[in-house]
Image 1 (tube, rainbow, N blue to C red):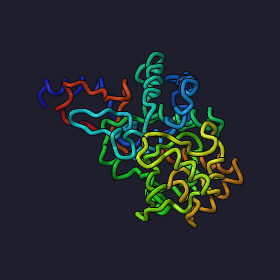
Image 2 (image 1 turned 180 degrees about the vertical axis):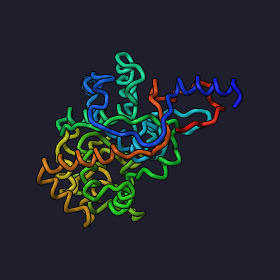
Image 3 (image 1 turned 120 degrees about the vertical axis):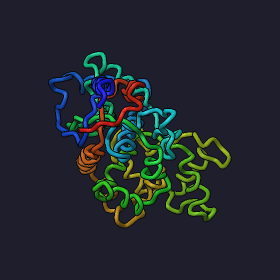
Image 4 (image 1 turned 90 degrees about the horizontal axis):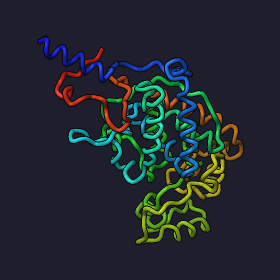
Length: 334
């Protein structure tokens, strides 16, 4: 190999810190390298939620949309480039995923106290946990040590992430691909205990369910009137409605609403109308602690999803570290 190319590769590796294979995740991963990491994330999340309560649900949702697409690698945070279409404009994400600026704020805070130590992928995992805990939900010890991906894929996101029209059967199949059980599916769907959804996501179930020209019969009549008023035909489909009756509090009200036919999204209500998932909805509607326990298990299992691809610790969560001089160099893995 020419000396000039070898020296360029060495320089690139200095900036990129590429590794390959799956990271060994463990609790307290930053206890020595950045002992204030987790407390810093929680403090910034707390401030973000004071500014806007909805940011808790938005940040938590990032874990789902990151981990299901090629593992928990921070790929969902990458902006598009001239040579890469990222995941932010994927069908399930465009005009929907938000609060990226909260992750930026957390990253900036961490870079000030321990530069290029804490990955953006780990920030998502910590911030999602904190969003739940600070909203009145369970708290848990997260496993950390992820690296950030070197790419993102809009195509992969389009092919993997479900739409609001999804039914329980298709969701069961999707979760099974990641070794997540039916109970995991129902408990993790309880993430909709906080937050809001857009009218765009429910217009079909209000006015043309399954092409019938009629509303979804599973919607409780009084609730349907509320939704019709919120989301009229020809209205602004970016208007948002609460996903359950207590949108700022992480509790089991979501499941109680499903039992009473007051689920906002089709993908939510179908969990109660479908036989294989109904028993878990009923269980969690009656036992909040059981929901909390299973939700934590599900979040940990989902957080363990990895792609095994090379990664780095990004300095900026929106872009990879590679300097322009590295663009045409061969990708090295070890």
